[in-house]
Image (tube, rainbow, N blue to C red; front, side, top):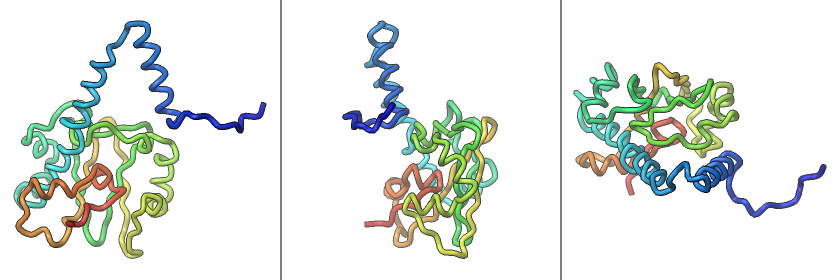
Length: 201
C-alpha cells in the first residue's frame, strides 16, 4: 500500500511515539503533565549541560582542577555537587591540537545525565551509534565540524559502567575571562565531541 502522502506531523518518529504515549497516559489519569514538565525542566535547566559547561570552564581556569579531572573525573565532578543518575562513573577526555574525542554508545544510549542533561535524539539513533565508529570524520562533517586532516579522532564507547565527558579546547582570546563567561562558550555537543567550543564574540 502506498504511503507517500504528506502528514502535518512535524515530529520525528521517536518524538511522535513519546507524545502519543504521554497523551494516552494523561487521558487515563496515570500521569500529571505538570509533573512531567517539572522533571523535564529539571534536567534541561538544573541537571542539564550547564553543569558540564561549568566543569569544563573550571578545568580551563584551574590547572589543578584540570589535572584532578584527568585523574579522577568522578570525584572532581562530584566536588561541584553534580552527581546522580548515570553520572556515577565518569572519565574526562581532553581535546588537543593533535586529537579530537568523540563519544558514542554503540549498544544503547548510555549518557551522563548529571552533567549533560537529557541525551539528544540523534545520540540514541542507530545511524549515529554505528557510523560514529565506522566513519567518525564523516559524521563530524555532517554536524558541520571539519577537522584538519592530521587531527586524529578517538572514539569513546560509553557504557553502563563508564561515561565520558569531552573537554573541548579553550578558545583563543578568552584570557582573563571568568568561569561564568567561559561556561557560555561550552555547548552540549562540544562535550560529546560533535562540535568545538564557541568562539568568543
